[in-house]
Image 1 (cartoon, rainbow, N blue to C red):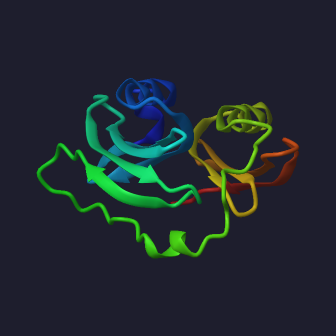
Image 2 (cartoon, helix red, strand yellow; image 1 turned 135 degrees about the vertical axis):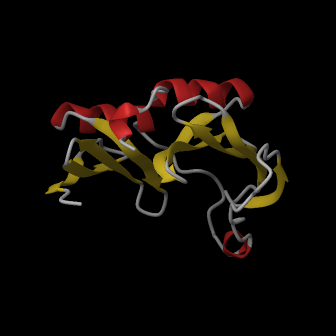
Amino acid sequence: ANVENTKISQDEAVKIAKAKFNGELHELDIDEDDNRFVYDIELRSATEKAEFEIDAQTGEVIKFETEKLTNNGGATGSQNNTTSSQNNASNSSNGSAANAPKTQSPQLIISLDQAKQIALSKAAGTVVKAELDEDDLVYEIEIRNGKMEYDFEIDAKTSAVLSYEEDLDND
């Protein structure tokens, strides 16, 4: 399977997720799972987060889970709406959220989409991973183009490119 051959684009996958849950894009990855590509998407509203797995060929929602967010940004209980018969998703532990001192989400200057555009302006290809490291307020973006892999770290407050690596994938 080749990540460039997906029928559903990242934007289409995000639209599918946003049709089920009204929230801001917080994390977007593409993974190969049982020889098929699956988008892992996390959306967040002020009070909840939703995690999706969406088939990159068909657009089918394989997994959809929502969790209430506590006022310190951690998840409390979860409501599982998985549609597949086998659920091998590992549930996130709630222990780490209890001792987090944060009282509210940090204020970001740029969105995940803006960070992806900054990375794509410097390296052509397909974004295969995009997420916010909340501890450092840094977006981590990975782009693939054929055998080339580009990794970016972009400051969420200043939009500066903090690091940039390119590797030739010889697998």
